[in-house]
Length: 106
Image 1 (cartoon, helix red, strand yellow):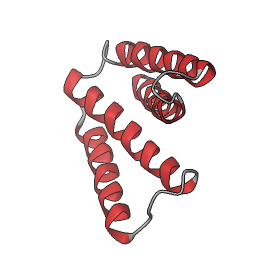
Image 2 (cartoon, helix red, strand yellow):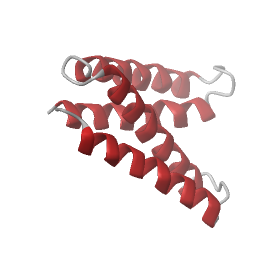
Image 3 (cartoon, helix red, strand yellow):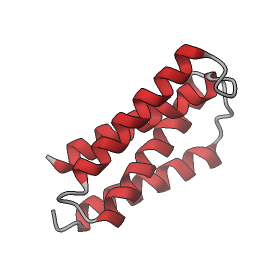
């Protein structure tokens, strides 16, 4: 269950990162509110996950899910560049996340 919570926390991290793009320096109310809500949810769920997962593993997976999700949203929604090098780098991060899951004692 901790792994499910951790991945959900990573998805919330994607949410706050995307909201950050639209806050325009925290001058836009709704994106700023979304940023805060997603961030609080993300960090809270990370805290729940580290009750039973090693901190280093949980933090690395949390940031990895957030990074991959944010890059994918950037490419699919925000028109950021999509090329084979970026896709290869994203793939390496995903391999790292899966590898940590496979070697994790929990």
